[in-house]
Image (cartoon, rainbow, N blue to C red; front, top):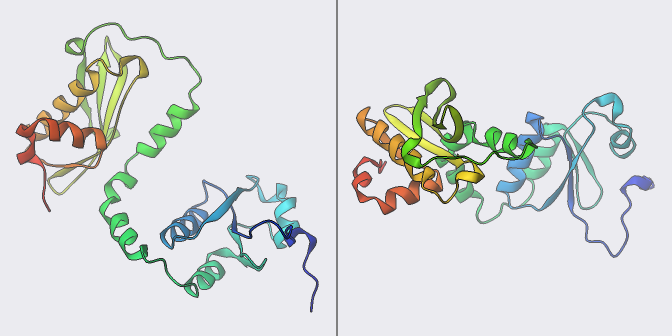
Length: 230
């Protein structure tokens, strides 16, 4: 029997777990993460260096500098999506896997929106938020279709947004946010009401995927008739 490479050995008192060598920006890695999550398999995601020439650690472990690479609990390595998916097909599916597939389809609008990108940009921002002066009545709500969002502006400055996806006479609200300095002051409600009213004027059915918009509709029954039941 061939000896196990040192890099694959684990201490006896550590519970073995699937390990995925990957990068967040890699679409193949993203597909593997999605399937692992759908199957209910716990795993450790290890971010590799951005350029293959820099991945000496991955080459030592897996003999390749290409991603994704999945290391199973027994130390076996599966390189690339073809090998990884072949291995995952042999595993017993999680009892919730089918339900997650349905919910994956139900939330397509939210995934296709730029909400994740907007949240990431918010996380990466380092400037302190400037306190907004004024009231919700002073704020202006503008539809910016090229960005697929309604923007909330105060004195010309962007202080909030409601992202959406439009398709076949429907508008799916996927994410809403306002500046921290404006939270709890009614600016979010101003944005939600204006966006919903505009959608109504345009004859669009509303799909409130965003929890904030959904909660606003629940508290304002006059918008219930606009919500699609399909």
